[in-house]
Amino acid sequence: MIDRNVRRGLFDKLKVSPQALSQRARRLKDKYGPMTTDEAVYVIAHLEGIDLARYLSLETLDRIRSLVPRDIKPHPAVSQGAPREAISAKKRKTAISYPLVKESFIHQAVVIGEEAFPQIVVLENSIRALIERTLSAIRADWWTSLVPPNVQKNVQRTTNKEKKYPYREKRGSKPLMYCNFADLKEIVIANHSAFRNVIVDPGWFEAKMGEVYMARNNLAHSILLTKDDTARIALFYRDWARLLEAAGIK
Image (cartoon, rainbow, N blue to C red):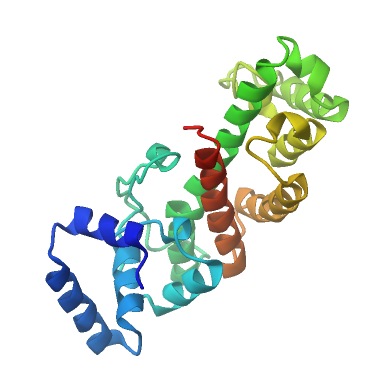
C-alpha cells in the first residue's frame, strides 16, 4: 500500500487523477519493469523530487532507488515542510566534462550535490538551532558553563585560524557556528537531560551522529558517497525531523 503522504504529494504536484497516476505507473512498468505498481508510483515520486526518505524504510528506499531508470533525470527535491524549506529546487548548470575527471564521476557528484549535501547542511544547522534554543533557556552564559571544555578549545582554535585571513567573511557571530558535527554531538551528550523532550535515547543519537559524521567527512573532502552513506544521511535527516515534530518544535 502506498504511503498516503507520498500519494498526496504526487497529486498536489502533478495535478492528476488517481486513474492518470495509475496509467503513468503502468507505462513505467511496461517500459522499465519488472516492478510492482506501488514501486512504480514510488519511482515516479522520486523522479518528481519528493523526499521518499521521510516516509519509507531504508530497505524500501534502497529498492526504489535501484529501480529508477538511468536515462531519466530526477527533478530536484522540493520543499515538503520543515526543515526542507531551506533547500532550493532551482536547477543549476553543471559541467559535463572536466580535465582528468570521468563524466560518470561528475554525474555522481551532481546527484550528491542535489541530495546529500543540502540534507547535511539543513540537518547540521537544525541541530545547532536546537542546542542554542535549549541551552540558552537554562543559562545566559551557557556557552562557557555548559559546553564541554574541549569543544570550546576546538572553537577557539578555529577562530584563531580565521584571524589569519582577515579579508574573508567570518563564519558566524556566535561560537556555535564554529562547531563541527562531532562538537555538536558532544554538546548534546554532555547535556542530554536538557534534550530529553526531543532525544529520548541519547545512545541512539550518539550512534547516528557518529555514522553520519563519517559520511559528512567524506562529503567535506570531496569523496563520493557510497549508497549506504547516502542512505544513512537521508534516514537520519528524516528521523531528526520526526523527532522535532513529535516534540512540537517547528
